[in-house]
Length: 174
Image 1 (cartoon, rainbow, N blue to C red):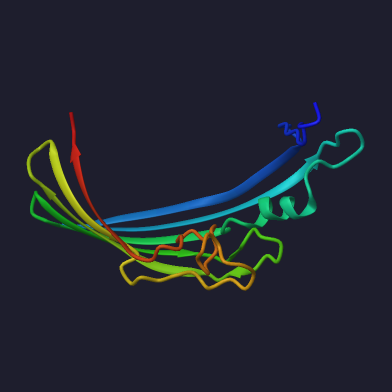
Image 2 (cartoon, helix red, strand yellow; image 1 turned 90 degrees about the vertical axis):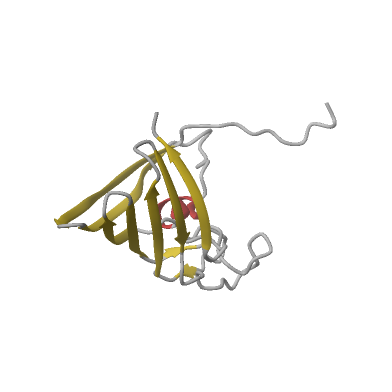
């Protein structure tokens, strides 16, 4: 067929190993819950299977697999209960540096932001939650290569590129 121009196929060409640790500490003082969580992960490509004597996965893509996610995350959370129905949660999030996956591989700086949630139990089964992610409207550093989907921010930042966001959530337990 003269119109046939491309062929794509999937292969299980890579073996990876991911190792790390999680540390979670919680403490309750009366109506206050404190939490600290730390996570460290590293992914390594340990083998690539050749197809017809060729490596099917480029060195750049392997570098992305090993490095385009933050290796470290730390969250500190405080939840205060005000009686049986109302609670307030404040969370500090921190992610280590990572890379943008495009060819120039700009470094995405470590980033810290704050989330807040106010929850009200209308009944035993119904909760109303008003929340704000990234209340300080932090953005990742701008990238030097090209704009990502019209934005000067990397697509793979754990924070995203939308800035702060508010939401209203209804939760019903059946």
